[in-house]
Length: 194
Image (cartoon, rainbow, N blue to C red; front, top):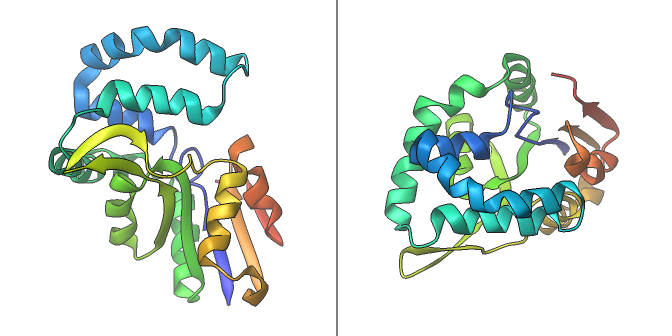
């Protein structure tokens, strides 16, 4: 088996999809109003005083805590159709299709949320490993149901679903520090190649 692992934000897309998803769901005025109290957390993250997971968790709570899952899914599907597909790098999509055409196992591995990336992955017939949101009785809690799929967590999650020893060859594509460990799995590394 040949395995191809793709990061999403900044690799397959031109920029961060999470920020765009927030803007799409809530509009610019609400986005900036809700981000204002997040400033200390963002500064702490930039100064490496808190983890990527902690910072992202705070933002997620500010925007999604109490939202009905059905409403989230409706917005997610609209986002993929109306906005996300315009953010895709043509060269990355071409490479993804190249792997599919050769019957490689293709997995998108992302810190962004399963709950909107799953719509995009279904369009392209590929697997997905991503950060999952917690819900109770159809309402989002604002917490993660899984660890943020970033850095070493990407490799841990890949190993849950793939027997790496059974792979004849591994390709991996990424663009940031959060992809380093995933790239280290691969014989063919594509760092910022698109």
